[in-house]
Length: 247
Image (cartoon, rainbow, N blue to C red; front, side):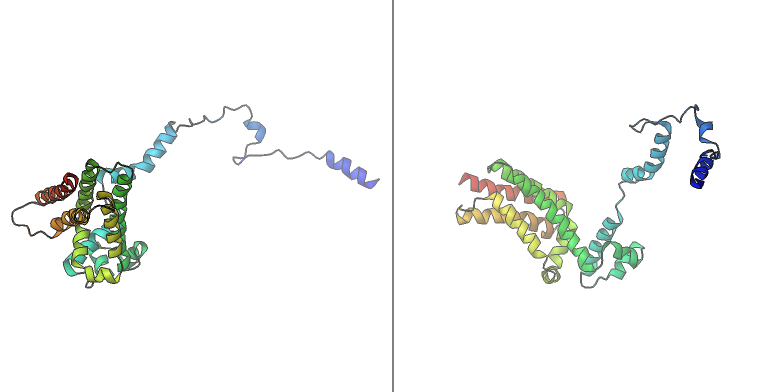
């Protein structure tokens, strides 16, 4: 039948040799030494060269401890807020001081309110960290003393933000951000004194928190350094907690 002849004829057609991308036939590559495999741990010469090139710039940046663009925006904003006031500082002024376009600024923060919110977020996270630690410790004087020391370190890290809060309370109240600050203060207070303690004990514990904060931020300096103010404020606060323990 015709279809049988066509099938037999097709089976006798010599197929063209399969070639690779270089033009060589696949059979020509058979028997050649394969490319050496790179170690899985990334220690091969090519891998080392490539990784060194890829990580050289990031490593240099880390070694120089350069702030990120977001951190630069926050630092510039807090300085301008403190100098000119929150209400009288615009995103345009922040961008100009940074030497970036408003589009670059918008990539990180859409509004001035977003920048202010980021200050509280960082501060709140640090306070949550020391309170989380306190939740795992025994309710004793040593723990409460250490909580105050850790709180002092949080204040040290956020002094510009806390001064901004102190000087712009009206604006922050409208932004409903002060509640974030007070909520963390109450959580810390609950770790410094029992809820059923006498009123005078609970007030001392609250004063221990507010004294450490307010003295550091608002005490009028004459010849004292910031470290001296910090240490004196911390000792006053610890003394209040010790008075509760001795009562």
